[in-house]
Length: 116
Length: 114
Image (cartoon, rainbow over all chains, first blue to last red):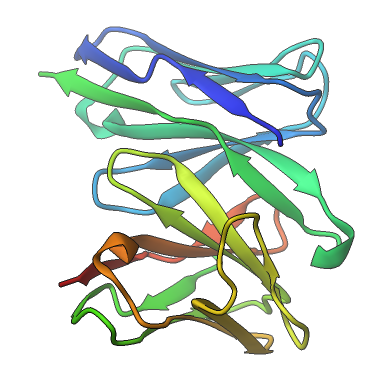
């Protein structure tokens, strides 16, 4: 089945430093989504990327989809303590049985901790 | 925004008993609900997909007789863990497409089987 790997598994940064997590798929993706899960919480949708080479920004967060649509990255500029959590990428797979909705294969996640 | 209400948030049960987890879409219709399990410090693993009015689709390795899923209405899906054992202790989360690009997740249920 499809595998989605993320690196690094853990990242500890000083507050104010930048952070990047990388997501790699074994297959070409139709799209990729990013989620953030705070400790003890549930995943919260951040963004979806669809086009080859697409770059989207949300304030200090920059999301990129690779040209071959097999990899993606999330970069956070000048981290803050509120950025603490685990960041997951998720690849969508269309299946006929789900009313046209994709099922998501989640990446392994990158846990970000901030040193104040 | 879209909300999926999940209950209970925490449950402790004795080995051999059954536990029902409910997920309700509050302000949208969820024709499809995805059920995940997450072990500590691990990723989310899709267990099954429920569609309103039809049988659930289970992922490989997930016992359908142990994890009973019902999706009787457009706003309610339930997961029942039958004859729970300590190895079933985990964080169970539901999610549904909310009409936008992303999926809305419930707040999760932390199940502890003693």
